[in-house]
Structure formats: C-alpha cells, structure tokens
Amino acid sequence: MTAGFGPNDLSSYLIIGAILFALGLFTVLTRRNAISVLMGVELILNSANINYVAFSHFSSGSTDGQIYAIFVIMLAAAEAAVGLAIVLAIYQLFHTIDVEAAQSLRE
Amino acid sequence: MDISTAIFALIAAVTLGSAMMVAFSRNIIYSAFSLLGTFAGVAGLYIFLGADFVAAVQLLIYVGGILVLILFAVMLTHRITDVEITNRAAGRIPALIVIAVFVYLLVQAVRETPWVKAKQIVYAATTGNIGDLFLDSYLLPFELASLVLLAAMIGAVVISRKEIRE
Image (tube, rainbow over all chains, first blue to last red; front, side):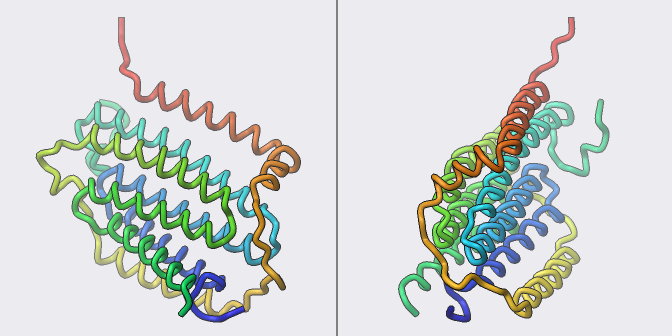
C-alpha cells in the first residue's frame, strides 16, 4: 500500500471528505439565502457518503457501507423535496427567502 | 506520478474547487451550477473506490434530481434583477476561523490514526451483492425507505399547494 496522496490511499479520501464537510458547514453557517443553506446540507451529506464508501472499500470488502451511502442519498432526496417545498411556501408568504427575515410561522 | 494518481488529483480538484464556488460565490446561479461539479466529482471518487452502483445512483439522483430541484427553486424564488445580492453571507470571518480550526483537527486526526486496512482489496461488480443485501438483511430499512419517500412526496405536495378557502 503506497503512502501519500493517491487513489490507493485511505487518508486522501478522508481529507477530501473533511474539506468538503468544512465547506458545507461554512455554507450553512454564513449564507442567508435558504436555498444556499440547503446546498450546504447537500455538501455535508456528500462528504459523509465519501467516508462511508471509502471505509467500506478499504476495510472489509463488503458492501454494507455502500448500502448506507444509498440510504443517505435517498434521505437527501426526500430532504431536498420537502426543504425546497418549504422554501417555496415561505417565499409565497414573505416574498423573500432570507433566513433572518422569515422569523414567524404565519402572517 | 502515474496516470491514475493524476486523474484522481484532477477529480479531487474539480470536487473541492466547485465546492468552494458553492461556498464563496456571490451569485446564487453560479453556486447552484457549481454543485454539478461537486456531485459529478464525488461520483468519480466512488468509481475510484470500486462502488459502481453508488456512483450511478449519485449521478441519477443528485445530478438528475436534487440539482434540478434546486435550480427550479432558485429560478422560482429570486428576482433576476437583484442577482448580485441574492446570495448574501453574514459572519464570514468567524466562520472561516472555525472552519480552519476544524479542518486542521480533522486532518491531524486522519494522519495520526494508524488505519488498519484489508490485506487485499477486491474490485468486483457490486450491483448484485447490493440487491441481495436489500432483500435480505436490509429488508426492513428498504421498506421503510419507500414509506419515507412516499411521506416526503405527499408532504411536499401538501406544503407547496395553494390553499383555497371557501
């Protein structure tokens, strides 16, 4: 097993996942547009998936990690559908999707 | 540096570069389209990890589904005239400091840990194995997943419909 950066090195994948997670967290923390916040959540879920598949590939050779990744992708799809529907409902109510402007649940 | 390392570096650069566009771009349209690079790059990483089915699912659901949903939401909610301020950000400097410390800690943890790896790594088609597992040991989560998707679909329709009062 070669050490250092490359496709046969576990820590390369883990570091890519860590940076992707950090960028997603940065997006969630700083954006004031609700859709951008949802994009950050998608980045975070992708980084978690990279770790699942990487550990599954380098440890046992079983596909259990990939199954978890598929479940995460499925939940991300459900989250995106419901989240964006909520964003559209908020936009119809407040005519903005700034997360600091929409503070109440009704008019 | 052999060819696979070069391709791996290219895919990693595309993934992280477009993720940076998502995080730092001032225009939400650019952010939304940069997600395409991130999702496709992650699919490439899955292929490097021997996960062919997960890579295909990633392309189908993320690029074909979630990205289109996000683009729809962007187009439906923001007014074209104020493109520049649609993607406002607040508190960037403190967040950047937190993120830098966080990445440093994670990278140190990854480098310091003595990972125990398998003796030999097999590259085989995974689709049949995944199908067997879904209908065998993961049958209950699989059925629950269909229930969750149905609930999410109905919920999205109920939330986004127009309410008509008599």
